[in-house]
Length: 186
Image (tube, rainbow, N blue to C red; front, side, top):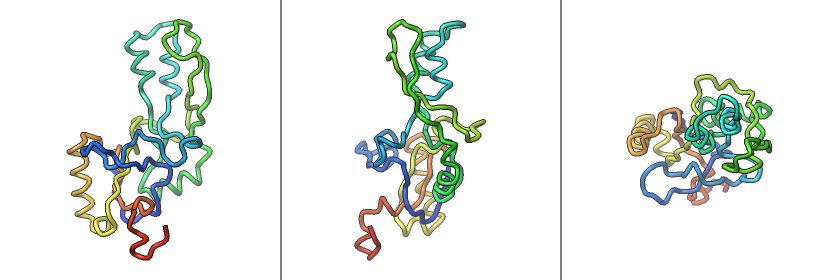
């Protein structure tokens, strides 16, 4: 889990409030403000190869699980949100590109064309598909107190069952609807 003090924005991450009342405050599976340009979740090359494999066939359950799995597109970024933003700008060329690939098995179980992430240039050994899945926004006063951020993070982890690597907790000023009231630019 990445804990942070003030951060300039939530970048490309999902920023819509979850209406469930439990779980992450911002739903990681809703599109962001860049849905046509930047994916949130992708079908990986590894999963595509499982779905599209004929020889040494995986079971139908394995193929269905691979097709249903989506990895966080930001999983290769590390550190605080500021570190991740800086890394994303400096290493933009390492992100996987979504490409259209054919489904060649011919059994009609999956679409004829699948959108698949090319293999990213970030080192992904030991990185789970769900790393950097959720960004949790806390108010500026809470973010200034490490103990309060830790408590908020603990609450989120216990309520959601998410793993620590899936969560980034901090103040994201672009998500603060009241910053204008404090004289800050929108």
